[in-house]
Length: 422
Image 1 (spheres, rainbow, N blue to C red):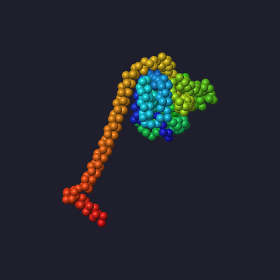
Image 2: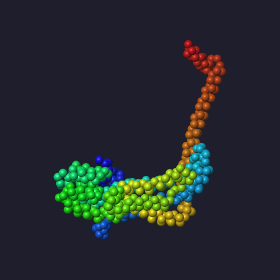
Image 3: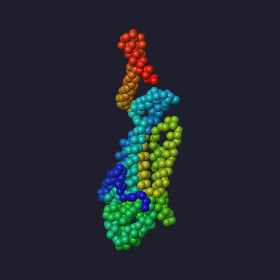
Image 4: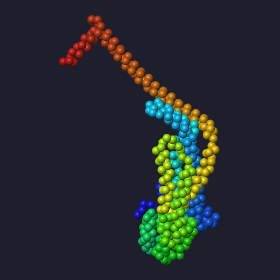
């Protein structure tokens, strides 16, 4: 059995995020289907609108990331001067001074060296959760799952249903769909929906042959699903590769449409990357080469992955790339007209506060260092005084007169030393 279970993901972190995103998409779907009366391609349209909503919500993060990249390019000449100023200097004072000047430069322009990474880290959980939603729509969209209810109830009430479903699952070669028809209740219901949602046209024919008494219910479910689940004649639960294989010998038009899905995924990703500004790498040629290689590989990854993932997921990638491209057009125009001097002026007060905090911290460190030095010197002075006093006392005892207390003490000292030698 495959390790991928398509029912709703139960992870403690990504699970709730996926459930929340699925709820938003379910509301969009219900509005399209029930209010606007759009019954054809409803899921695909919901995916497109959902993508727009998600990227509008992420726009503040996108703006901050783009602003950082733009300002990073602006400060690069000043950064280079600092690097050249301390080039080859490895002593602690020089390294500290270079760090302070670099921090002051970032404060001046109001950016943080980790700013871009933070934006990416915030977006990653959302993107992973979205993958869960789009990979198995019925698990998160109650409105879509309701289409299967009558058919699934009839199937699980049929004797020997588990063996028949296992045979259909094997014949359909759905290796990515892990099912367990020995379960009961709602879990069993979910597994049957998972299987039915991923079936191709031939798979639905096999379902009717295996459950002839439910032929009308199965046909009705397939018909409803085909209206909401198809986009430009493509079943969004199928993969482009399976659609190409199934239609290459007959319906060349459908096979060509399926081929266009990964091609458009590649082209839109490439367009988005070409328009995306990146932070300057300065003299770091190796990092620049790595970034260039990554920008070439990511669209190619979208091309190959789109062949083996559902069309619905590719629709999300394509819609997302187009939305980001439109955003980028406006962001590029905005940043081109951005007044850098105004940004620096606004950051003066904040930069001064940060510089003052760094100065106070540095003074405290110097005070602690001086206090430690004084303490060590004080201990050294005390030790020297004690040694000097002992030497003077020894000299006085050696010059003591006969019959004095000091002379008697010297006699006792000499007696003890002689006995210790024997």
